[in-house]
Length: 108
Image (cartoon, rainbow, N blue to C red; front, side, top):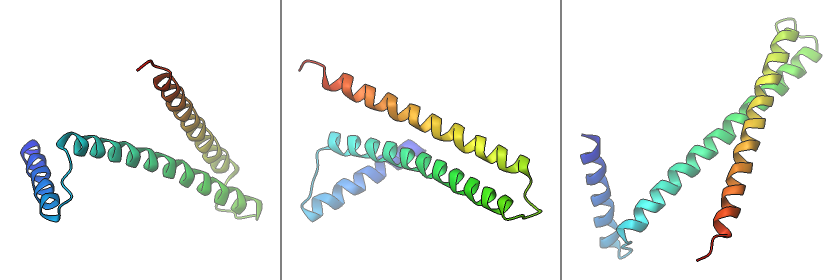
């Protein structure tokens, strides 16, 4: 059922663009959607890492200010979570850059 709904949605978008006079090739639309999905996924991942780091900063500040509800263990666990998430993000970025360089060095 989802496939039919997706096809219907794509067809409706094509008709809308045709009516507006901005018709695009069907293969360009598919590529654009895939790029948007990947970009959105990457943005969500980076936002998640940023949120973890800001939460860690808030916990660290609260602990340093003497807040009794925040323990040292909580601060250390949050710090490690944000560190691992950041390192994973850097590794993904490095792999993407490496793949980009490899594609750019391919003969045409």
